[in-house]
Length: 144
Image 1 (cartoon, helix red, strand yellow):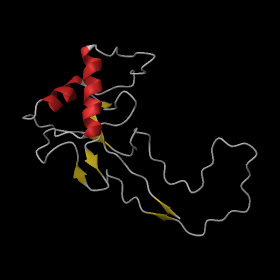
Image 2: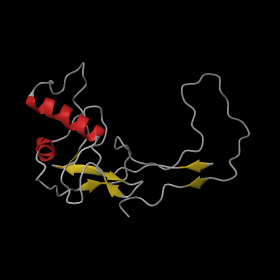
Image 3: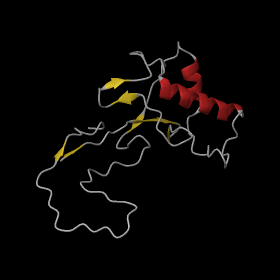
Image 4: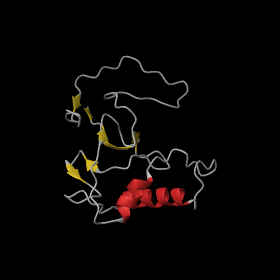
């Protein structure tokens, strides 16, 4: 059995992890490819499909086009700061990032690999199971 966890270093601005309105991390680093994404080598915003959508929604929330904390749209979890939206809008501006590690794409704390996971079942029994070998292929944490 092979197990893999994708750690996402989370951008921190004003002491807050930058999450979009649905809770997804505003991701600037691919730990799989060990490279910047949505920025160039000088840390100027270049965007990608996901980052562009996150910036557009955060901008609409900050501009009042989408009500902040709207119960129906559930926008209260957006923490993408106005300065990140401004940075993304100005291709001449470089970012000096700070990151918080040990989280996944929604900044849940990584707890390790789970070999067997069963949810939402009724009358299900696990009996006499043995996992003979497990290989964790995640690699070291980004903070190390």
